[in-house]
Length: 83
Image 1 (cartoon, rainbow, N blue to C red):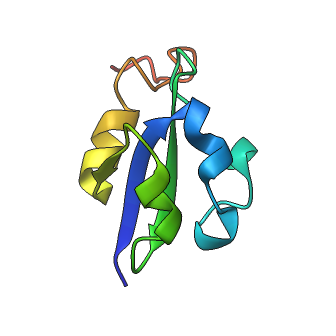
Image 2: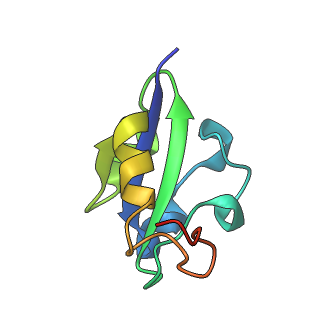
Image 3: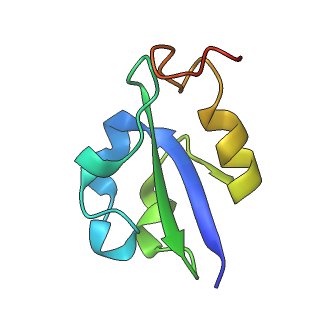
């Protein structure tokens, strides 16, 4: 089963049906450092609610890991000193 990651505006979270995602609620979603974007994810077919969300972008696992490791997403206080 394919897992899809979706970066979307935080303002659109009210449109998400968390019963159709891998997260139980909005509080479990990764949030960008500026708190404007969130990540949701689902397995299998795209949930119907996605069509109502404006400004979202789909990612695969490799792409989302790369994104979440950028300064826009990663907490600099948690990063290792070897970077």
